[in-house]
Structure formats: C-alpha cells, structure tokens
Length: 207
Ligand code: ADP
Ligand code: 5GP
Image (cartoon, rainbow, N blue to C red; front, side, top):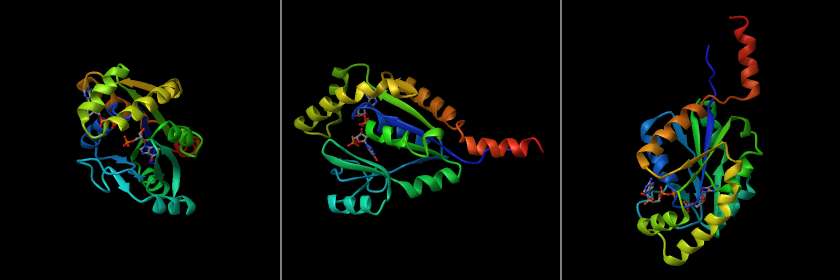
C-alpha cells in the first residue's frame, strides 16, 4: 500500500542567499518536484524566463487576480507584489508531487495558517554572514546599488523569523548545500495529512 498525495517544501531566505540556485539543482535532480511559479509585478532579471522563473504581470493584472481569489497567498516584498496561485499547487499535490515554494517570511506565515500547513516542511536559507550576502548580491550583478541596499535592509528584518522554520540551511559550500537540500526534499515527502493517514490505517488493517 502507498500514500499517494504529495507534500510541500517551503524555502525562504534573504534575496541572494541562494534559493534560486538550490531550486535549479533540485529540479534537475528530481522530475517529481513541482516548482510553484509565483506571479510578480517586479521586472524580469537578465536570464529569467516568463513561465519558468515567474509569471510577470502588471500591478493591475495582479490586483485583478487578488480580487478573483486566485492566490493561496500574496505579499508585497521590496515594493512589488508577489503571489502563489492556488489551483496548480493543489493539482500537483493530488498528483503526488513535492511542491516547492520560494516565498518570503509573509508567505511562510500565510502558508503555515493554510490547509497546507500539515504537509509543509519549511527551510530558512541564509549566507554565513551579512557581508557575504552583500558580496553575492554585488557579484550577481542583477540589481542596482539602491536595490541592493534595500534587499540588505530587508534581510536584517527577515532573518529574525529564522527560529520559526523547521530547518536552517547555511549556504556556505555549494556542494554541501546541494546534498542537504536533496536530503530535506526526501524527508519533506514523508509528511502526510492526518486525513490521508487515517484513510491509510483503515485500509491497512484490512490488507
Ligand atoms: P536568491 O534566489 O536567494 O536570491 P541566488 O540563487 O540568485 O539567490 O544566489 C545569489 C548569488 O549567489 C548568485 O550569483 C549565485 O550564483 C551565488 N551563490 C549561490 N550559492 C552560492 C554559494 N554556496 N557560494 C557562493 N555563491 C553562491
Ligand atoms: P526576488 O525578487 O529576489 O525573486 O524575490 C524577492 C522575495 O520575494 C524573496 O524573498 C522571495 O522568496 C519572495 N517571493 C517570491 N515569490 C513569492 C510569492 O509567491 N509569495 C511571497 N509571499 N513571496 C515570494
């Protein structure tokens, strides 16, 4: 007998901590992972693709989607809207996938209050130091100096939420971080809802 429904792995961490890098590794490693592509009103960075990294929309389109109740959660981060569409996430869970979220601390709080909380494993990703975060944001070369300062300021506010997460990944050596995130994805799959487990038990005693 098998448990058929999927689970969720939620990643948060300051911009520049390495979430996108680790997500790319996970997606290459495991075809059974579904990345929840967020919708945003921020501009596209060099190398980003519509429908792969984000759905890029206008502020008006985003506000229409809020009004239509399309989002599992949404938040304003660094003065832009970001949101997670509900329907594709539920479909992926029903199909037995591990759903990967890259959301800020507000998204984390909202998802942990939603119906998905009991099947969600949360991981906070950070650099070893704030100065290393600055180095990586500068080296990434995708943000102007004012944006980098805003992201660093935001990082100091976000890191305070770290103790609320199930796990912490200090992304120092990339090869080691890759191994850790693969291990966390394995563990996250083992989380099931009480309802699904009760149904399993009922069948199991008769099997
Ligand atoms: P985020 O998605 O959290 O904003 P990125 O994945 O874009 O962060 O990473 C920010 C920058 O840091 C990128 O240029 C990336 O190549 C680099 N990076 C990621 N992980 C490491 C690491 N372990 N060591 C050094 N540089 C890294
Ligand atoms: P970036 O602009 O660097 O891609 O993302 C900025 C921040 O927005 C990151 O902290 C990222 O986790 C967060 N983010 C991305 N998508 C979503 C989303 O759908 N919901 C929420 N709440 N945050 C998101």
